[in-house]
Image 1 (cartoon, rainbow, N blue to C red):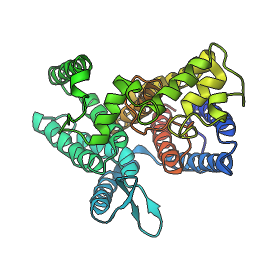
Image 2: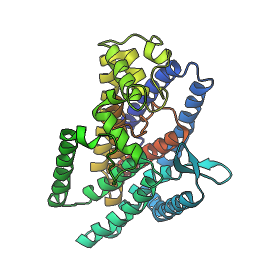
Image 3: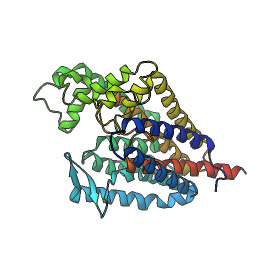
Image 4: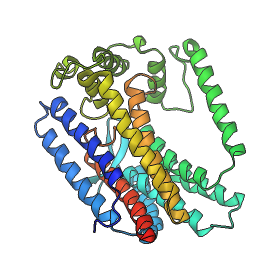
Length: 368
């Protein structure tokens, strides 16, 4: 069962898991069973990873359409029958409470990889249009909940598949340049755009507030800007080598909100400093590079697209989380892979790593 197992990928995951357990023990010391629950979630994710790794990519492809249709159907059910918490309708009670949007993080790359595999050698522009439509449906439903963080992850996974499938640079560069110009204009005209009474009709009010708070956290230091300000204080106070394990004052005096979930990177930075951060980032870079190598060596188009998009999910997770905690991106509720607390997210990560292992294993078995 271990024949063809990718040891380098497993080693990268092991290092990140160890870092997650270490900081969870410290930041979750007063959260009752949070450390034990985190360890249990990791064991479950590890078991899922091992099982999925035994499934050949050709069999994984069989789950693409059913999983995608099930995910979209559940998203529609959420819009109609969903449970609302803190103004967001993201959950569904089917005997147990689930968050269907998590399914699409895996279903989306599977579906699009299947779509392009079926059209290998005869791709037309229309095929890319259909792929964008398949991506737009779940992303639109998730944004309506609203859940900007998950919609970004699903969008990143889908766009990665479309890009790796051969989308022309001529179609990629214009929207990227347009987005950069838009960001520049928002930053330049921030005082006018974020003035009282001004509404951006393309975004929800809370999303507009998050962007305005990112541009100027001091406009509401005890409210919307509190997360960003305290996160940056924790990161800066860690210095070069950190305050030491279990010695983070911002963390243990509860100045860092969501210190075991979305803002756990701030807690890690405070206790382990710049050196610890660089080592953690190096772990993620190693994982991403290994994933890209697996994608490049994949034996089929489906495997290559699936591995590449799953790797980009890990990149997006890490980049967005670290960016929002350090005040470079709006707070959108994206966890740090293998570090943040969260059962559903951990299961999703286990599935993703298992699929990467499956692709790597198929390649190695073909070479023997």
